[in-house]
Amino acid sequence: MISKSTKMKKLLLYLILIPFLTSCGYNTMVEKQEAVDAQWAQVENVYQRRADLIPNLVATVKGYAAHESETLQAVVEARSKVTQTTIDASNLSSENIKQFQQAQDGLSSALSRLLVIQESYPELKANENFKELQAQLEGTENRIAVERNKFNEAARDYNTYIRKFPSNLIAGMFNFESKPYFEADKGAEKAPKVEF
Image (cartoon, rainbow, N blue to C red; front, side, top):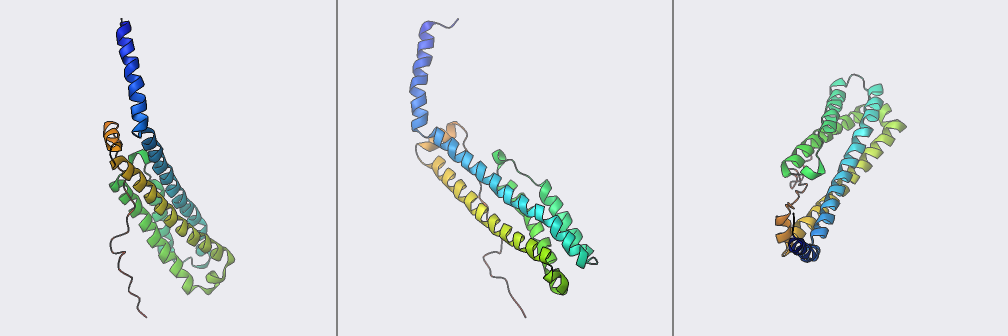
């Protein structure tokens, strides 16, 4: 049986510990960590929107350029790979984000080849469905860039907070770990060479 003095000591410890934890930012760390996780969900959301547009785009192109089956198949396979590559927000790591991004890059590459097909098919280029899908896809690509930037901002805010003193002491005690960033692809700093 726990003695009355032991209960009082525990109560006193809690009364001291709770204000200490809240004043040293534990709750703020939780809020910032949740903000990073929520922003990650938004990144996945816009990538999912892109993946959802692709079957319609492929079907539209298929009607005009059926013999471009290799390109169409590459897009379908890349989309499949993307939809199978998911990351739990609580398990974000640089390696996980890199794998996620590699799958997304594969889809971007396949989509680029698909969109080049339109140049060979004037009827496809003039098709209203194709134009609308292409515009939606372009808008989605812009949203992806915006949401990735917001994710990096949320991760930076969180990472900075858990590294500052005295927050770093609480972060270490409660295993708050820094979050990785989206990074530019290797070679992105060089402008592409355009030849005519």
